[in-house]
Length: 188
Image (cartoon, rainbow, N blue to C red; front, side, top):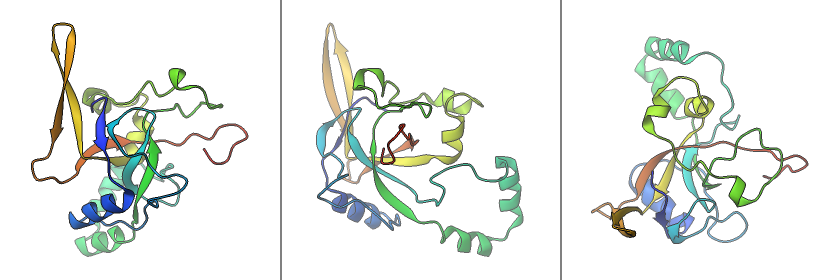
């Protein structure tokens, strides 16, 4: 993913566009009030944006069984059972801060010392273990954007180029998320 993107829509507009594209949404942030994501034509790390994710009761925490066991179980069930169980999953739009705060962080630090990790390379995702292991197994989401910027270097100058879909639909980037609970604070 890039270092800057565009998301200048209200949550209700995002919800409508995604539902028109066939995504089920059971919950979404309000357009106004606390926790409302930021609208920006120059969306930067540290901003609160919208992601689309499964609303699991455990918040994406560990599930029983390995991925191999899950795959074998899925293959052994018939398609009717799979269709019925997939209807039980609820999906939501959620405001999240862009940038990874390590799960072992105890106190809210200043921006300069956190949120350094804003994207990851696909080759690091494919390798087993590592810092992405828990998130890639259970904490996946879709980052919603209208477009993004790529930078062309011409000598010492950098020229931004805006990339978006021709049809005007939203772009959906693969994302990983995590939650951090700071000491003495139940709301972060």
